[in-house]
Length: 465
Figure 1 (cartoon, rainbow, N blue to C red):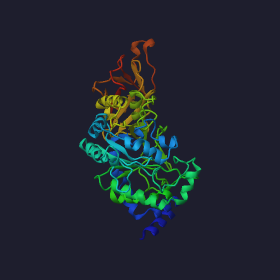
Figure 2: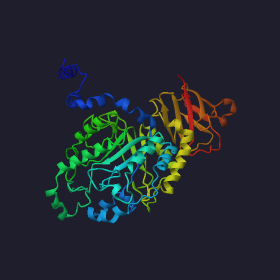
Figure 3: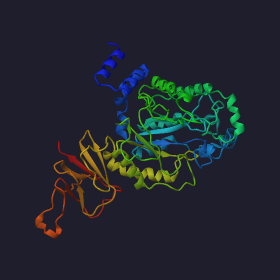
Figure 4: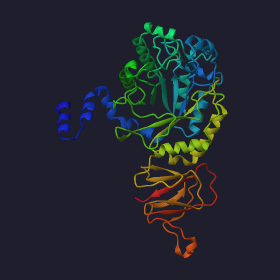
């Protein structure tokens, strides 16, 4: 039976909706294999849960925001003249970057190969606006990829489809020269066909010259009046090219192809924490939130709203408790090192992960039927059948686990595997004034008065079969 006829039969039998029929019918043949293999392709990613984002480019020189060219409405000529020949990362040591990521417990790293300013960190052959032409005098991606691989980290490339430098990229409402009416007149001489070819040429370089690339983080579409969407980028062509060059690659959702099941692998809420596991068309989907240490992605010397280590660890736990991944950003300095605010937090997160990573790797949201106690997050490992209770606020002596009775075989602190005793009811013999009131299905955990010397203590529950 031909595929189209088979799908029509499924529609008549109620096995497919009209929208599903159309989606099936419109899936390109080249994309079907990626769809079929999606769960397998993403296994490592849904297990690892924690990655490092790196925003690095010319904007590290002014050190006051990665969107500085757009925010200060500088022309390409002015921006390039001011910063291009001052980009001299003489202390760049990608082995050190990779070591920090690994020690922090991160399993993959995503680096900005080209941000919206249009500056390329690698030795691209289709532009002279690149790192080898600055005082850096080298392809900065190659040693980075090698350093990450040496530490066993997966490799991700961020690539911006926006480019305020390219002469054929039309000036729109997000462009650095959006308010310059004289500059907007140049759109008559700008050819987006040339720009679309440029995009594909650069993506081909990135996915051909550096071995296996595990992730591709596209950024970003803004369709509508005075914006750009999938037709402007030829998003389908970009996805097709990436799939052909790197069949196992994982891609995000920023090419304006959300209506295509083959156009993305995971959702990317940015600087935002969903209140529950994100859904698409009523179905839970793979997701990752990208977050900063502070309020800027690129190195920002004077930005002082840095999150505490406790906040960052709690953020990681909350994301995993909702079935997601955390991509936590570092903005290296113009000299090529991580500043001490970043390294301090990475080291402290690594200290927590050293003893508590079992509650992160391979974990996801708790199964339905388990209610989290107050001031906690629950994560669950479906392979080991172990539940993890993260204590955001230390309780006084007792912790109530609503509905956990008959579900728990053993309890211990994760950081040292020391036993935690529990009961389902307090003994009436202790005296009425000391009796603890608990629900019929509750467990009561007996905790020490003094909080363990762990930023956020974790209780590991071995569940009954």
